Length: 255
Image (cartoon, rainbow, N blue to C red):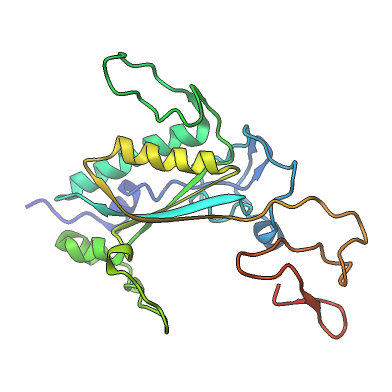
């Protein structure tokens, strides 16, 4: 039996070295985390374009310390691997696809008699569209493979239900969670379909959930409503657009 891989070796093979830097429009920049307000601010109309690129290398994975995108989804997968070599192969393949999708490029043309190389959602030329792909490992991946047990993070536990939840077990958990975010819905759906198409022998989709943050028009100075020093917030799903100021007018409540 081959010796157990080190934590560093496994994490490297898992592609967890994939990371992103915060970006200025169309440019990847150095590894400096943006201000918290930049991470949580709603997307502004006219501030993004299909040429926006977030580099998939750096200290953090892409999608962790990057500005909030307009569209995103989370998909969970069952992972089909038997050995450490299988797992390393899976994440090397994921790394290759993520590098291509986040950079953009021309879709390869295959023999017309063969299935197409791409879903065609975005056309023959892919643009990065601020796409980020973030990976997370589930507790079940470590539970299913004894050779991964020694490398399991001490604080990794299976998430439990909350009061009043009515959960479908078939739509919970997963060996691998992938968060996909971008400027547009078409880009995140295209990326998900690309990963499913190119790794069908090692990834089986378990569930997915997508959503969006409303893109808002920039507010003119002094047009922040009852709290002029704060810009108006976008409507959150299921919530009112209204908000209130504290007694001193210094901060919004429930923002």
